[in-house]
Image (cartoon, rainbow, N blue to C red; front, side, top):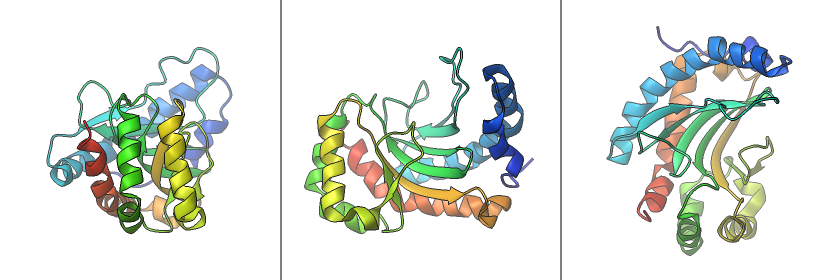
Length: 210
């Protein structure tokens, strides 16, 4: 079975009331697609990164009452987990797909990564296309375009990532749930691969801080 794309029912999953019912829909509708996507992307990312990469699919295991508002797959250079490492994500909210290179607050060396990014801010501006978006909290939908941020805003985002324990730095793309790209599996996968290829130099900058 190969990935054929996302459907509206995948996004409608996040309108289902109740933790158990929503988790069942995530398991049945979305996770099989994540496994297909992940298997295809992991080998490509391993080749790009020059080291073995491993697929992780969000389990939402800590949730006991509130159903998740989004779900995702993550690919990282660690077999046991991804949160403490720079990693790549593909996931869904109810109205868009996100494609991230993610540096989240669990990173033990996030201060060092932030300092490196601040030193290399001019290089980062050449790596990251202006139509990509940046988020500082993976739990929230909101993101701002690199173009809108400008160099000053990017610097402020990185300083916040450096100085605030819970601050995060995610960079990549949002694709609206009604975008035709999402209905075509091969076209969508090409978009994801292109995004991750563009962001790989940034991943390597961070990875070298380990």
